[in-house]
Amino acid sequence: MATKDTGSSNTTTTDSNDNTAKPNIAFIGLGNMGSPMSENLLKAGYTLSVYDLSTEATARLQQAGASVADSPKDAARNAQVIISMLPAGKHVHSVYLGDNGSDGLLADLPKGTLVIDSSTIAAADARAVAEAATKLGIDFLDAPVSGGTGGAIAGTLTFIVGGEDTAFAKAEPILAVMGKNIFHAGEHGAGQVAKICNNMLLGILMAGTAEAINLGVKNGLDPKVLSDIMLQSSGRNWTLEVYNPYPQVMDNVPSSNGYQGGFMSKLMQKDLNLAMQTAEDTQVETPMGAKATELYAAHTVDNGDRDFSSIMARHDSSVLY
Image (tube, one colour):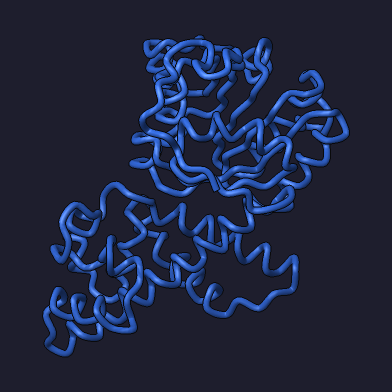
């Protein structure tokens, strides 16, 4: 694990400690996570070329100092490091492998290029891209993140990385600009497995916490008093500590803001589906994960854009208003 040194000063194109030139970076995917991650790289003095389908997103990064490319291949033209943050496995496959599996970005990259994919995708998809990259002499890492948009903005993300030791060593100083904790989980695909295990547990905890609070409220308990009791008892968990799903129990969380912001329910559903896919592929039983997936599948029909703590509305729809 590596921890970001918030006191360091990386504001030029060379490292002040070893005078090693910073690599040029291409960043592909400027959504809610990719944009602030890119901005932190620019603030640290990296030369950045960016690509996204959104002209609004690229214009914002151009104003911050990045050059804007017309395609992923154009972005990577003079880059030694490629970072991507894409919505799903099909997008990662399309960018790196192309439509026929051989005409994607990997085919144009020179040997020794470092590719860091921070998308959250199936481990099998990450391994497929990694295998293709390795055959071409390209270093590939799957490096999904935890910490949400707030962590991306603050540069305090957790990176969960799968890949070879040598590639991880090359990537670590770059990841430390965008994150506070960097874990090397293991070989290719391990980052994705660790990420979906964490998010499966998170979905289970949130659904269970909402259920327990609802049981207490429906039997006359004050939700804050009950939450405080459970926080000091054996039911204590992360959702109770920092992300309570019941409105007005805790300040500065989505449940006290109409379930806006945070981590959308449809993204939790996506990650739960990935966990179930991995469980099926490896014949692992996950009955609680399966139940959480079922609950979020029903919930996201009408609440996909609300924070995942809005699963509380399954028990009491009035919390949404």
